[in-house]
Image (cartoon, rainbow, N blue to C red; front, side, top):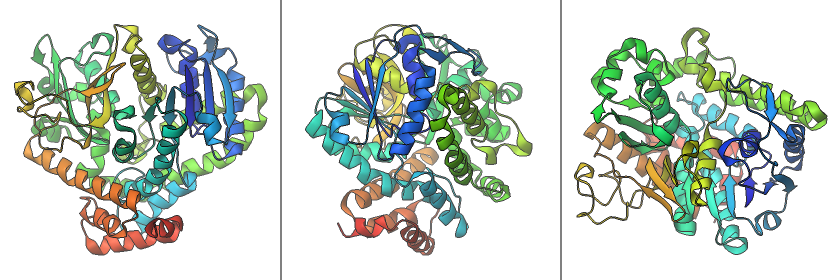
Length: 486
């Protein structure tokens, strides 16, 4: 199999390669093609992959210890030519960032300057990011139709839900959006509740939402929902990240376990205070780290992998720092890697007809971003789904949602979920409206739709602030002016 990575100079690409060299994905891919518009970043990541050679990091505790690969590692080539990268490709992984890390800094800063949360995928910053990433991803999708029309696109590019929704009209079910935050929530909650998920199967798991906006609402063990007991157990909640993010009394009353990104909605004042207290924004820290790191990686020779791994762990330690009081450290298992790249490779294995998660069974059950339609008639839908063709009743069938899905060589099918209660459904409907306005703005150049998206977002909620935001982002990103002229 030939795998192309769009954004091949990205910082997390070595995680994908490492996973392809050992474990259940070993031997599945014969060639990895790295594509990037920045040749310097490509050279740096190639240096990291060369230093791995036939060995990969595989220590169970996530340390930088190195063990022998279980098979021949995939050949690696790189190019700045998109047609060359796509020709003969079976699967495309896309993780691009138009504007680079400097763009992330602006996404955060413009929002903060008008008194709002500055976060790269949530709220104002997420809309700005989407306005840049969607046009570039549409170009990639159109090129795929020309150069590899049968290939699957596994999208990591953020905001993953909005980007995936923009691509469905071009690629249909051949595009699948992934994010590791929902899967990580499920597995951390299961571990805290003592629930075993055999082979990664999601039987008894109820989760509904949009990307970076979802809730775990059921977690069964032996046919019994253990989530209420977990939410009432202060000691168990204190043992994992999402359980610590939110006040425990709030979680008990809510009766759901929110995705970590709901911290920005439920704890907006606390999040804003945490961000204001930081000397640098998260984007500024990453931008500074990468500006210093990439030239060193390119020149590091055999030490490149160790240098990259140290930087990766440092970066993971700063994730959601605004939510952790008093410099609280992240759990070791959250620093070990094994996030979105494992989800992406599990999708690829299942599409190829291989074993599911953890090497058990055929196909896979994973939480993914895909159109809401289950393909069932109302009569076929389980009673728990409210007799609807939509996996999440109350949202349009063609809207991209984030839910448990079954993945086979035929593609991805969402598993019907319960209808969310009105507070959750109302928030989902409001944010989906924002997402669709943003997709329209980015796909057609409709500036009024962009303005409406900012105004309608629950973390903005003001036409005046929306105007200030759009003006600020237009000043930071001159390419938006060209978008509006399309």
